[in-house]
Image (cartoon, rainbow, N blue to C red; front, side):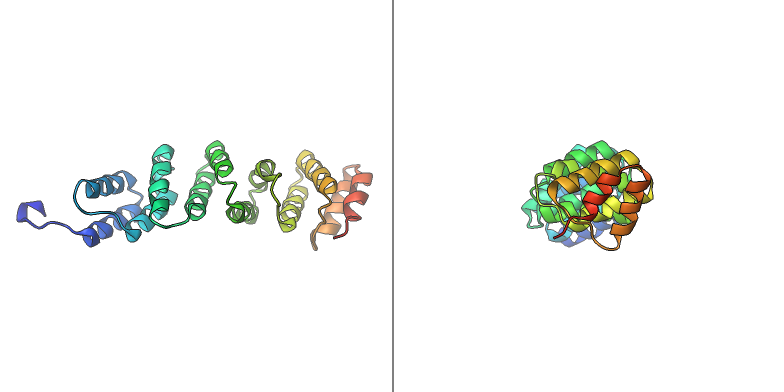
Length: 208
């Protein structure tokens, strides 16, 4: 376009950046966003939304996690809540198997209680029960929805993760967290089969 003295505007950049992000070509998308900064053009909300979606598809998968953090900071400055940005990023890291990075980022966003619960619930729905369980420790000092405990507890029992199920049951008893229907019967029966009769009785007797 430059050869014809045709200078692209923000709209043109946004179209190209969105196409690159849809393809997962984040290196070129990042290059164009930096190129905008070298002119009097500035990325707008459309640019940043495209970049956030691209992060969840390509940037983390290619190993550019630090670069992803920088983009998240810029996106948040544009008005999109940090919780929303980081939720996309945490879920992306889990999807591509970068569990350590996902947990580190999750700890960074603990102040966003709602997003933390959404992430744990999503992991449970995807049958990534142990991943969800690993995130309980960082948020134990916060108020965790009792539904989350019940979903995790039922999943651990169903997938026969004995050690984790017993540990979580002890946490629930210690905190007085009531199991939610329909998890109660299956969890109690599982704990009894594991020889934890007292624990089964204790968790079954918790009332709200």
